[in-house]
Image 1: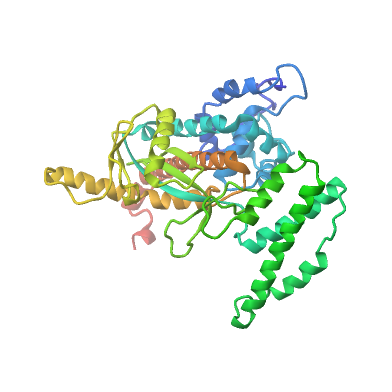
Image 2: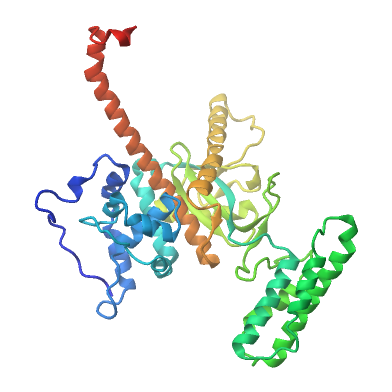
Amino acid sequence: MLSKTTNSDQKGFYSTFEEQLNRKHPLYILANQINWQQFEESFKDLYCPDNGRPAKPIRRMVSLLMLKHIRNLSDESVVEQWAENAYYQYFSGEQSFVAKVPCEASELVHFRKRIGEKGIELILKESIGVNGKDGREDEGTVDTTVQEKNITYPTDNKLYRKIINKCIAIAQDQGIELRQSYRCTIKKLAYQQRFRNHPKNYKRTRKADKKIKTIAGRLVRELERKLPAAVNADDLVLFKKILLQKRSDSNKIYSLHEPHVQCISKGKEHKKYEFGSKVSIITTKKSGVIIGALNIPKNDYDAHTVDPAFVQQQRLTGITLKRAFMDRGFKGISEVRGTKIEIPKPFNKALNGYQQNQLKKGFKRRAALEPKIGHLKEDHRLSRNFYKGIKGDDINVMLAAAAMNFKRMMNIYKKMFLAFIYRILQIFIQPLISQNFYPSVMQ
């Protein structure tokens, strides 16, 4: 149920909460630039009008999602810091300082599920709108990257051990007595698998690996015989697929709790394989505002990701880009949805010098997208995705892109304030220096 609206009149006798804060603070300025009303109108239909417990204010929950990715915090940390930071609370629409947490950390999980990908896309759209004309350029740059999932580095032995533990847990939950639990056997095999890289231990570790796989297969087959047909059927199918997959198979499973994870190789020397999903990023050519951030569930060729990425970009901005600059990884396309694709290649003789220089500048600007992706990963939680499932992949990339757009405007507000202070100092201090009022400075 939606909560009742509160009166936003003056709360204190002498001054309001708004007047007690620094009006030049970037979060203060950003809070007054965002159109919060559109979130209220879009998300109110997701709540029951008159039944149930009153929900937390929609603006507060949306602002917590923004702050989490702007400040690179976890759900638990952003909730704790909100209770200590007056600017966080003003950004969330509070009219006075509240000395308690705004909600439980788990409520953010439920709110993300409630609004879904469409709600998160609305946040990304607003972050583009806040950037004004910088987000409405008619030329852009495109690149892809990988957002890694929060899983351990997958090996066959790890997966088999997890299958064994899962089978034992399922048997305990269903009250099934296994013929053998293999606990002592697995412990002995673990000792035999140590120091596997030593040449003398190769045969011993290989034999122990095969034994672990055999035990996992035995437990899966025993559960199949003893469990009813509909109980844990999906888990058993997943276990059997992992046990049957081979080194050269495609669409392999690398994690039990995230079976959709893809193994992607981007040609990095320091990281040969990354386990997650591919992400397409579109930015404006001059200002670098992110106008498209799309998760690609499958490990598609880069050129095949352009069409769905432009569909999202046109839905967010309402603009069809005239040109988009890409690297050679997108080779094979020349035009997508009315946008001309520019890829580095030997110049056509029909191009004059001016046109060649414009293309060179465009390809140089495309290189600016690489550090932007680095900041997305390091500063806005794109390096490791902690959200579950494919929906979590979609949500994480769009929230990271929205946070970077908001952070860009906060940095602009900060620079404007510093430029204003510098100009004031020039006006008042420079005449004093010129009149030798501060001789030590002149020396």
